[in-house]
Structures are given as structure tokens and as C-alpha cells.
Length: 203
Image 1 (tube, rainbow, N blue to C red):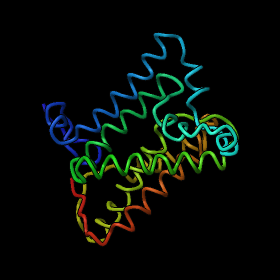
Image 2 (image 1 turned 180 degrees about the horizontal axis):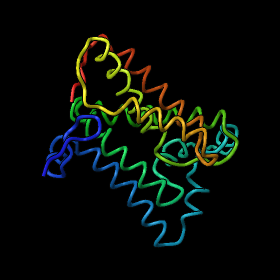
Image 3 (image 1 turned 90 degrees about the horizontal axis):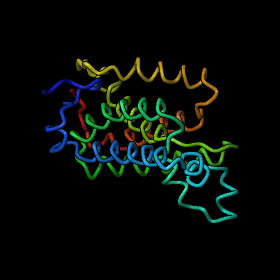
Image 4 (image 1 turned 135 degrees about the vertical axis):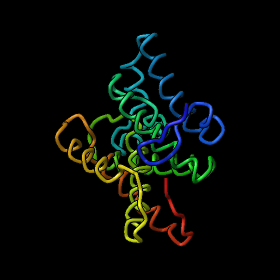
């Protein structure tokens, strides 16, 4: 069964295996890490070892893996589920248009940049795929706004979704404001600089 995703992409396991395989891989890896950590009862240890910490700590102790590992660790089940639902919709949409290589490059590189900003401006341990996912949302948001300027109709819910998520970012003290907002801005700026390619994101 096929159905239209929140941003216009096609969501179906069979369809995504062919057109959005890396989105499925990312979801699987995030879920597997959380499940294994819970089964082995090492969830807190995983967060301590792999979470993003202040940049000066990383530089002193040379724990550079945290830039990457922090993107695949989640605080609890709801954190994981919420992120994976958004990744499913945003990833299916973008990977089907950008193709897998460009999509995974966008996801990982923006996620690493978000981790860097989080390390610079945050004082505690932060985990989650939110930064990379918000980069995808920022990327989609840019082209959605561009399409609206051109009078192109879209069924995407990106604008209200981003607005709601930004509001919750400030309301929930557990959420990394730096991670979410830097991700959104980075994704938007990447799309802005790529606009010369005239990519038209219609669902």
C-alpha cells in the first residue's frame, strides 16, 4: 500500500526500498542502537560515552567520535519514535528527489555541523537525530517557500510543522534549542546556496 507523506513523498516499504533505501537504513540503525542498549541495560552508559559534550572536553580528551555517535543515540522511547516519524516523512521526500548519495551527504554533514554548534554553545550532554532531521526540514522549508513565491501549489505541511516544533523547542527544557535551531538554519542555508540548480520540490 502506498500513501502520500507529510511533505509529498511516497511512503511504502516496497517503494522506499527502491527509492529511499538510506532513509530506511537510518531509521533501522537508530532503532537498533536504542533496542540493543535497552536489552543490555547500557542505555545510560551509551549516552555518557557517545553523547555530544562541550567542545573543549572533546578537544582535550580527543573523543571526536561524539560528533557522529550523538546523532544515533536517543534519550528515551518517545524521543526515538518522534524523531523517526519525522525522519520517515522528510527522508522519504528528500531522498526520492535528491537521490541517495546527495541525501545521505546532506544528512550526515549537516548533522556533524549541528553537533559542532551544540558542542560550542551547550554545557551538558546532548543526544538525538533532531539536529540532522531539522536540517532536512530547513532544506525542505526553503524550497517550499520558493515554490509558494512562484505560485506553485503544494500539499506539504512543512511550514506549520516547523512552527509547531520551534514552539515546543522553547517550551520543553529537555530539548536542545541550539541543536534544533542550528539544524533548521543550516539546512535552509544549504538549500539557499544550492538554489542555482533550480531544484523544484513538488510533491
